[in-house]
Image 1 (cartoon, one colour):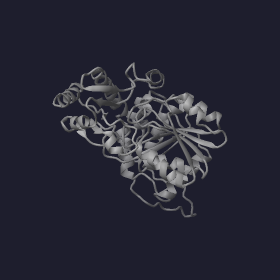
Image 2: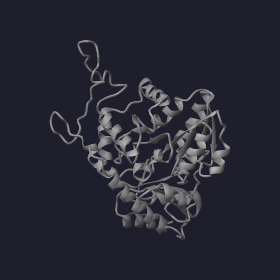
Image 3: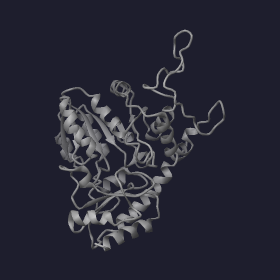
Image 4: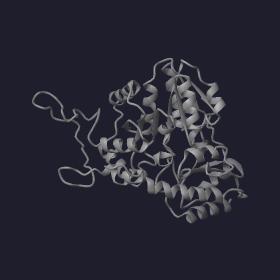
Length: 379
């Protein structure tokens, strides 16, 4: 396929056409095993379904191209992808991670990483000085950041984080689930590994559980990650891989709509008498707005949070009164979701008790705003 805009590459799935049928849509290969050649070789490159499968190559190649990476691996979930990076490190390695991040991975780091003898320091990754102070040159092996960070949407300067990690001899990995390659290309800013919970925006239809890693270089660490995926059986199913590719074809269209609507909602509730704060990096008063404006191109994402006046009980009651928004965990789908985040994360959550997290879908913006307005007014 000739070089062209990423949106075109995504829409056409890199222009693949099935050679045997001329089909525009790549086929699903459900096979778990493959025939050897008469001389005992596997010249097709496929031997068994756990290390790899022909259906994987399409979404992996597309995502690698969109991120500007050297290689991509898909996984059975975002957690499987993320934890594979940490499992590839050695006992005793020092890790720096953000205080505000996906709660499931934060809990895993606090427990499983410690059991493996890895030391994890959680810092305010949006503060460059705090990130730099946490580094232990020669011992720190990985800096993990998430930007925008769930659920307060704090912003980390990716280029600065990459420089800090590199100066200490560490690698930088970034959870870019919310930004997607549509808005941010972390490898161009110095990241070594980009992680996506592909369940979210990449798939976009709330019907696939998937994860992905994209590497800036195909090196020894990447080989260890690939071996962990195969050895632990953390692979993506063939049909799920096919659905993921289908979803990625409309990624640019969906993100454009989500960003535009999220911006409108965030602006609408600034100064609202029943809202304590509207948290969205697209708002000029957001602490990370200037950095986000530099490293997020074309929008500030489809995620925002609102803090409801009246505290936790008022926030939960507001969520109970919506009808267009759906009360559910997850994000990045075509339907808009609302949830009281502190209840989901439990004790130790950095989410304020009055915070409602909003995942903006592709519905009409006026309908979404009106539904929130009636839910707030009834309180």
